[in-house]
Length: 282
Image 1: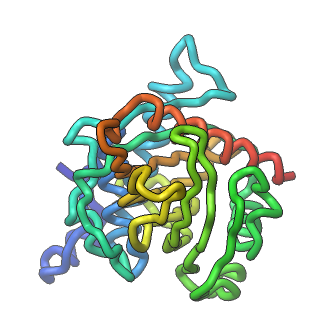
Image 2: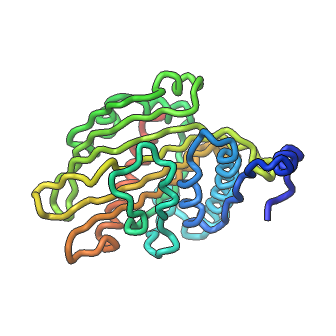
């Protein structure tokens, strides 16, 4: 059930308008819920995402930072391999352009959550920079952006979203291979009031592979799908909460996508990325 709704919600409900969806409390459900509600064109999504952001902050402050073994450098990590923790095809329905391959339940996930000492403005400046190899030289062999939309107006806060297509080549250690991929990216601001009255301010970044990646050496395997979501939220006491889930569908014959060596590599990659991002702030 919703918490006590403001009068405007009750009025809209009486007029037959769609009300915001209530965000779940459990972390993996929160992540798939947020992926599905990313679209900034629907006002109700902002309130649903603000509700999700409040739940993420409550989860991180109590269930992550509140534990005795919490490590600020390592943060939180988890493998999201159960069927209930996976995206559904309906969760991908808002993706524009849609991926060539849509088989969301085949992609298994990981999530990393960390606090970082950046400002939202610094994050925007870094993410909108055209050559990401200047900031993340160890992440890419080659990197190029095309199909830009809204880059300038998003930078000065006069439009809702920035979009671009990334063409990248990356190298991985297991299996030893390089892969070329085209990934759609969308970045939006989140400034909304949650149903409980909490004011939320942050950024969201969503990415999805355009089509299966080309892997060398040929025949080694097939990187079929990749879906990513970033929540970057101002915290009540200062700093930013960066929650970064990724769902991957990697076909390597007899080695399952859920193999620990793969999932551990994704987690390490996300954590290293967030730490490198923070190193460019300030």
